[in-house]
Amino acid sequence: MHREPPSRVELLQGTLDLLILRTLLAGPTHGHAIAKHIQRTSEDLLQVETGSLYPALHRLEAKEWIAASWKLSDRGKRARYYRLTPRGRKQLASEQSKWRAFSRAVGLILNPVDQEGP
Amino acid sequence: MNAFFCRLRWLARRSRKDAELREELEFHLEEEAEQLQAEGLAEEQARWAARRELGNLTLLQEDTRATWGWTILEQLGQDLRYAFRTMAANRLFTLLAMTSLALGIGANTAIYSFMDSILLRSLPVSDPESLVVLNWYAKTTEGDSVMKAMSGTTYDEPNSGVTAGIFPFPAFELFQKNDSVFSIVFAHYPSWQMRRLNVSIKGQVDVAAGWTVSGDYFRGLGVAPVAGRLIISDDDRAGASAVAVVSYGFSQKRFGGAANAVGQSILIDNLPFTSIFRCTPMSCWEPAISLAFELRITWLETIIGFMSWADCVRE
Image 1: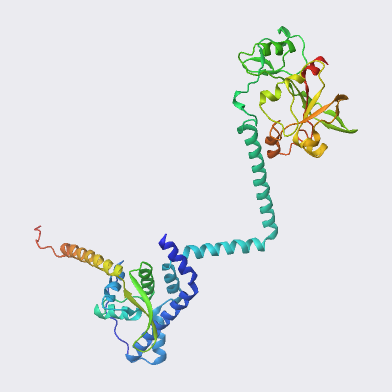
Image 2: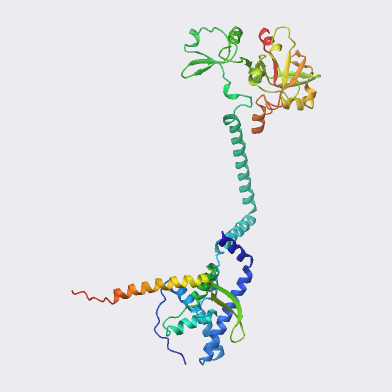
């Protein structure tokens, strides 16, 4: 039985970093779990491509926003666990407020409070 | 700077990181496959589906590696390796290219240092700025000139006409007497450089170049000898014994050392010179030339003989 792929939303440029950081706020976890968490939490609307997830994780690690260490997973396998660094936490806060401002601005345009008469 | 060292550190553990990335992606595939199996796919099918979901593995690895920030270094290394491979494969071309480069750079360096010593550096004398050369000018054509005959060369200056640096001896004496303008007046006659001198030392004959100079020549230039003494104004009188100063190179070649050259007898064009003094290596403009270019044949290996001016004039 094949599951029906739900209609998906393309990730906006630059939002993947934000989503990864936000996911890691809950605690350290590995790449696969990050992807699944984003997919689940977005009710399958957002699917993170593996091809962009791992480069993004390593990029964030290079920026020292997240740090990685090897731990045993729930199933007893060695997995690379990522966790948020203090700098990453700061970055997440600023990105989040930027995102809120952005989505509010877009919302204001899409749903104007005062209907302008023709 | 910190980021740079960080990258260097990473470069050192590059292969370990590569292995780690492979293991990380391997883990991802297993997790994905297990999840698909839990959703009801057969083991083999689940594995394939996970692999499909991952997409182009090499591209993914490349993209991830690119974030490590080594790409530039890696590409530089690749380029260098490629360059050396090409050179090794094409030995003749490499040899020719390297030879022409070496010759070109060498010739350039030689020419530049030559020009530097000739044009840019001042003469290796004590006060080169205060030296002046006296010339006379005649605007008229040669037939109308006051000068009727002379031994030497003249040349035409566009502005001033016929020009020469040769003066009659009475004129030189006049300059010396009225020395209010110049502190020291000296004369030299360099045409012996062109004329090859026949120099005989202890029966060994050699061809050399030389100058005839007046007694104040070395005092005027302000140079000091390495050994012995230089020609002084007392040598410049009738009846004084003829003396010569030899260059550093000549003393090394013909006398086997600096001190040995002092007081030796030599014959210059069959005229006996009883004493020989050694010029300093810094004088006679010798180092300027020898450093720059091997002009030794005419200048340095040869004697730069200085006779007393008076003797020459009275000759």
